[in-house]
Length: 306
Image 1 (cartoon, rainbow, N blue to C red):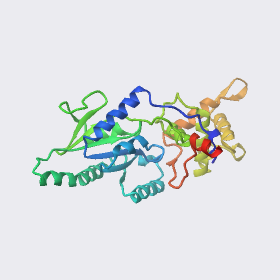
Image 2 (image 1 turned 120 degrees about the vertical axis):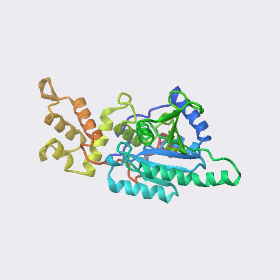
Image 3 (image 1 turned 90 degrees about the horizontal axis):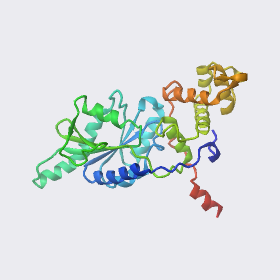
Image 4 (image 1 turned 45 degrees about the vertical axis):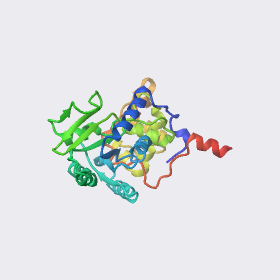
């Protein structure tokens, strides 16, 4: 699989005003909670980990949750769980859509909050509800998880700070309150491979990246993980296989993505493959590897040249 910078789109500078504002708000809200839940996409645990979140968590009790585990490779998920556990973190793999793992998550929050509750009791302070927050990038499944945890009749309290559009306290059971926050991307996606994977999974809007280079990476990864999958999915003959460019051309012809003169509409073919990946028709593929080295950033490259 090619990892060169030419295979991915140029650096994207995020942080429009609402993102900067959201980050400032999150820093304030983290001060008000007892336990932080960091929600990651199990398919891209490293690429979906927002470094801004790591900075604001500090010494707060911290749970790493690998969501959408049903879409990821099970063995890869086990490796990622072990990776985070080695760092001394509490980590769970869940599927927020079905609710699988949600009970374990609530128990983990309660367990991490117990020393705080004991401290309150020792000081004679009347216990309040344990407060937690779910932090994560856009499209990682925060809203789905919150709705599942709270149930259809979610109680959103109006007498708490943050009861504004996008930030709301949600009552979960008798002794747990959860603060809903917007998903936040980080200022600059310097690791372009990670940026491409965020695009593949839908964390980045489809109209702000180079689809051609992103799909080249995706086809390479699918082909590397399971060489027979693309041939089976798109009924490709041996002579129709090849590199990412050849594969896309062949898939386009097989799917009838033709324009005048029998030329393949590559844009349409790319969108078909992307939709198939997102709809789990290309298997349970984890894009981030535990032992994968991050790409050099622009700053690293400049330093090396000096």
